[in-house]
Image (cartoon, rainbow, N blue to C red):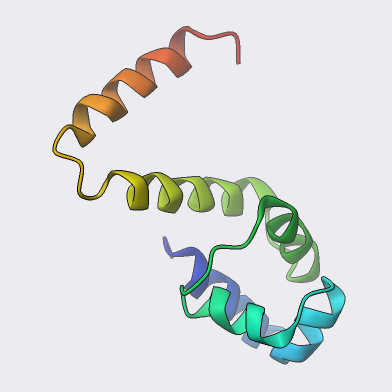
Length: 97
């Protein structure tokens, strides 16, 4: 599964948790969890970390999907998207990460 919202929803349902139960555990309202699962809103990194704990999911996997979707949204209509990604990849490879 390569979609963050689907991964979160599927795992919540597998655990038998209601939207309101997840919302309560991460200190947000139920509507926000619904918006995240419907891909109408992106969780913050802090919320994502809390969701990973509640749903027992690997935070690094969630964070990778979160960034990939964020970058996609930023670049989807950019004519130079591939050049930007290539430049970013080079910067990451040559940095001291």
